[in-house]
Length: 180
Length: 353
Image (cartoon, rainbow over all chains, first blue to last red; front, top):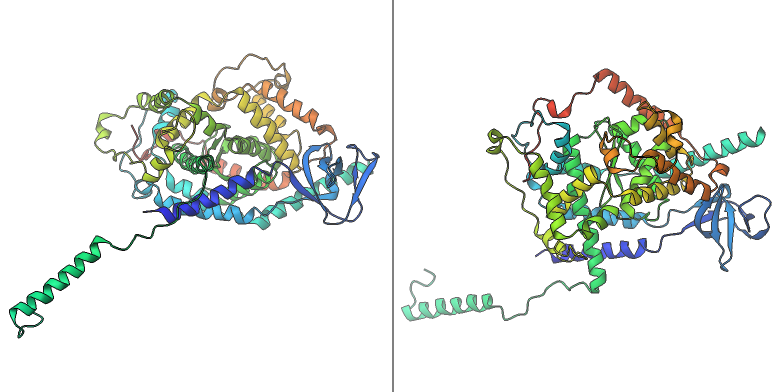
């Protein structure tokens, strides 16, 4: 009986489904005190409110160099992308839990034949191009290669560093443009 | 003999009592303690099982594609691709999903998005790109396919007959020579878990066979495609994700146009009217995607909405080129890439009928 692992899988997956359905918008946090939320997506637009450092708003979509946001009292406005930091949310724990469950589920799957010794079948030669893609659909999967994909971990710090490098490039380009 | 000196009747009594005790245990007077059943309603249970089925189908499909094409052996590059892809996915509508990226060893420009988050990008696609922004947009397109469940929805909507037909199409086209049949490994047996999950799937494919679904998915992904509307949607959403992540908004347009100019077409071809007749079918990409001019026209609509002309986006050229240079050096050392199917000792690992 594999009820207990299955219960764990269903619990984790149900949490993931509940969480993903509520993440159409994502929070952005003010990088400093006095970040302005304006009525329009331009520099000299009327100011609706100002944010304190760390204060978050829900960002809907991009419009030029602005995020379309909604203030806490329900007003729609815009905030410069340069003045806020998008928050990644607390999904790291959930992503790890899903990863663990996928690894456990792997043991229940019937991939054992494919992960054992190499097949003795020689390559099929002389296939013409029209049959190649049909062959791909008919072939035994290389589950070992797929498990490598699953086992590969992306360090969260590396993703954050990439974000910082991108922001830096944008700032440098914006400064160069302003100086011209 | 435990009590050799005792009377026979006493020995018999002890043995009989022992036998009765053992038997009464095996009849199980005590109630069995089972794990508590999860308390989900039918709708929730269907969604949970669907998510798990997605993973099983996607794993099978990705496995077939990687077996067919082979993986590109540069772990540093693959890690980089995973970092960029994971970064872009944080700006998608589904940041909680797990996306896994791999580079497959083929020079044609293409990428595959399998259910469950398995995304494969070709070596040719990486060679066609000139900066990280273009890579990010391509990965964003695939992330959109996965997040919006384009493939899973297509498979679930198929009737049983359509599923059987697509799963069997491959078997007729690729017949194994007689001398190899005796050496084929037996068919894999679908897991019990897979069968249990299959019966909970929604729609007309309520008893979707996961193995057949994976094979039918291969037919979609390599031959038929998901349809123009879903490709336009993936372009639109992928562009939004990459721009939100901070990348150059026009990168995907540049990437697609370069694909066409590499075929000898003039740059102006990329920006002709959206109803340009479909180009001569040449590759898997041509068969499964709308023509490039139509795609660019749709992407431009999104760029207008997002006021892309006012956006300053990153290109990440230096980072990307340091990785691409490794690929180009490895290619120049290796010489012209051999046809994989004509290689000696090319192990297909047996075939499923």
